[in-house]
Image (cartoon, rainbow, N blue to C red; front, side, top):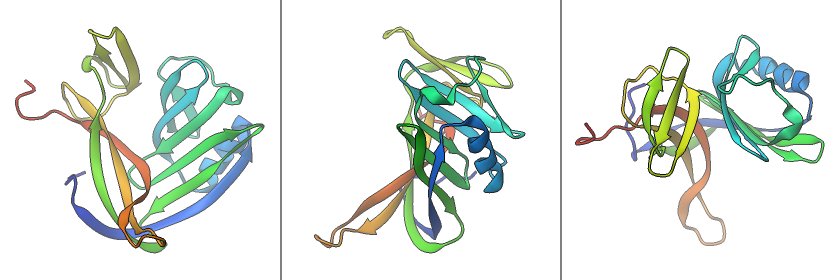
Length: 186
């Protein structure tokens, strides 16, 4: 992806509301139904944040633990074309599916926010970012880019506030994880 950050772009965006019971088979069926073939997954649980992958009709997580969707507070499954963002509502996961390239005209700005920590371990499937000073680490899906630092690319949609008439970001979605090295980071 040839990425130009902080530039206003034009495209199309389709947003569809989603609500399902907290059952893994229903979530996998939904992803297959909307033709979400692969993507990066991040899940917030009560006790941790888990990174993983969605591919071949199943979830695989960096920690290697089996999935328990009942523990999920929030999840995002995303790739460069779409994002499924769900939050826990008692026994349901509710939110929306955002797809780029179809639907209503939209203007957006892509931005990259660097994760804390440096990549110190990486193989074909997973990479681990370590922040030695804070004694923190996170294991997440590896990306093709070789870098010291990585960041989360978000697509920020621009709209007009009807009450104030001012333009600003009205919604955003996760797009990708990319190299976030800057000149002088060597």
